[in-house]
Amino acid sequence: MKYNTGLILIFVIAICFFSAGCSKKEEVKSSNSKLTLGNKAQISVSVSNLKISLPYYRKLGFRKIEARDTGKNPWALISDGTIFIMLSQNKFPSPALTYFAADMEGRVDRMKQLGITFSDIATKKGKFVSAVLRDPNGLGITLIRFDANDLPNSQDTSYTKLGKFGEFSIPTNNLENSLLFWKTVGFSIEHRSQQPYPWAVLTDGQMTLGIHETDEYDAPVITYYSQDSARRIAQLKSDGIVFQKEFADENGQINNAILHAPDNQLFFIFKGEI
Image 1 (cartoon, one colour):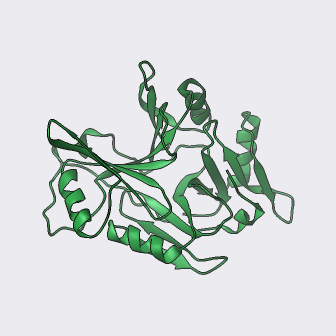
Image 2 (spheres, rainbow, N blue to C red; image 1 turned 180 degrees about the horizontal axis):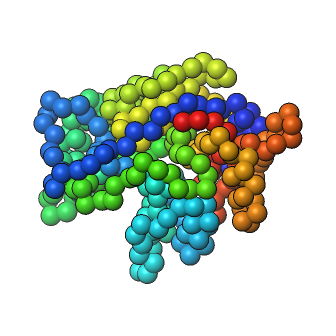
Image 3 (tube, rainbow, N blue to C red; image 1 turned 120 degrees about the horizontal axis):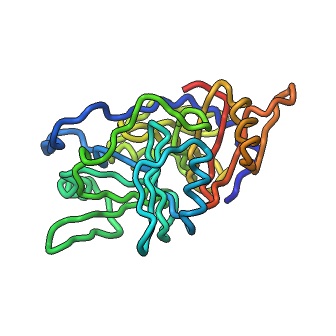
């Protein structure tokens, strides 16, 4: 995982939107409705040993929602209160995004009509199950036909020790190409800037993305913000969390830091307000 000290410049004002409420059964959207990737989303992280990774994430303040710790591919669904992360003891390009919707086959058909290509489409007994596509930067996105109302709902309060989720930060070598892709699949631009390099914040109501035209890091990062980040960083260090990089302000206070989870997932902890 590559990064440098220029990361301290990334202070993005990101606004997270999450779906609120649900009916008894998921509403199937008409063909004239706005296209989105799904009705619920999660970040998927490949881990080599769930028995090591899960306790680490819980030490960061994530809570276990569901888990299967036996069988060929153990997994655990965890949450910070606002987003969900699937830890899967299964090898795949990580991290990735996963979306769910009962009408996913229709969404995939509409994306094909818009020129979106898929690297894999799975069926079972002739019925659509899932599809995989990639953004211009190689990020994997899995679309699964599943009633999103059968999945847990997010809350309004973040209880992680890291702060409040700000964005899923994606590095790119061409911001405009990335924005074209994400807008095609239902994301809207919330904010963009040219300083300190071209970047933008987007949302589809389920996930907030930060697209950064930079070579300061080379894989997607889960980014958190809080006004009391110095206290949070100090507390995490006292809990035994080791940071790979710390950034001191002019007074020597550590307000921003970078950590790697055991599975090499990168986290940014920044001082700021969402």
